[in-house]
Length: 196
Image (cartoon, rainbow, N blue to C red; front, side, top):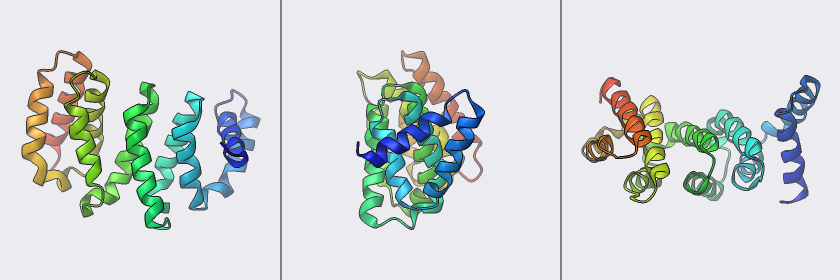
């Protein structure tokens, strides 16, 4: 990481401190950074590269809150890098809490991209994870993503219902309880979404 990345990491670490004055200083330092589209890449670097679990998680949470507003200000090449980095991090993140935060980030971005078919790699990634025989973590992640997508873009996925039904059918019988529970939650969310 370069000096700017290290500085941002220090600010994000301060946000997790049990000291309200440090948190307030970190928030004040972060405000001007978050107004620029460059913060998307900077926060994504933290999500992807920080050795600190809390930093990766808080960077994903902050980025989730800013991504939609700043997305159109990014160059196409930067947008492609961010989408790829999100999927890469989802596939390689060892910490469950961070994976959940990155999944929420993916869902927030999917809200603006999936309805316009601008992130087909996300659905391919979900399908790949759902069928990862040797990785219950990836199978659970697939259904976590589908659960979160049901809240934002379920109607846009109506053309994929046949494929989704196959995935749900397989997952509901998964031998890993966490996978079958997450699949059931996602399936129920899709069923209860109007117009699907």
